[in-house]
Length: 176
Image (cartoon, rainbow, N blue to C red; front, side, top):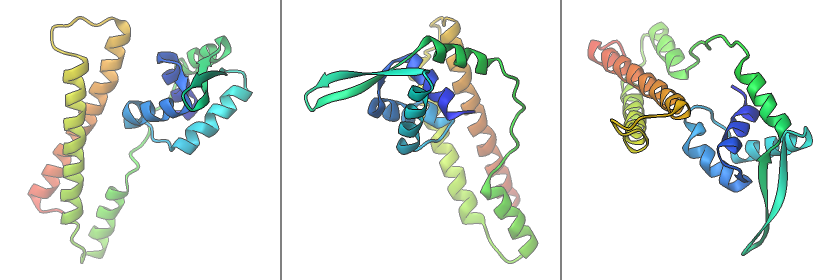
């Protein structure tokens, strides 16, 4: 995934200031694509320089803030990018390397780290399930956009359920 495309997606959902974008990013796309506020602001500058977004000043109590809107060229770029074929990415997780290292060393107990990861995945799963309950209540029909947004959330739920199950299995077998 590409940070510029994540930003274009978020701005198409709702044009906003850089600060609002960074906060929203932390609460939505940030679950699936990590970026610092500095990276977001840097990318906003590049997108503006490339003619994909435009900034306009908005008067606020503190003066003026830049409000970003996606331009037609930015929308076209996002449409082009969504159609590009992409292969699944391999798992890249430090915990798995630590387990391999522990296996080779034969002297390290990584049980505490496994239990910590189990709790982190449990917490993430609970957060995703709460979002699903809040945003997609049972029996409420979804339009195409809502269905796709729910599909992204369901992927996160399945990811966390899978990791949580794996942590439980690994801890139960004493393999850690």
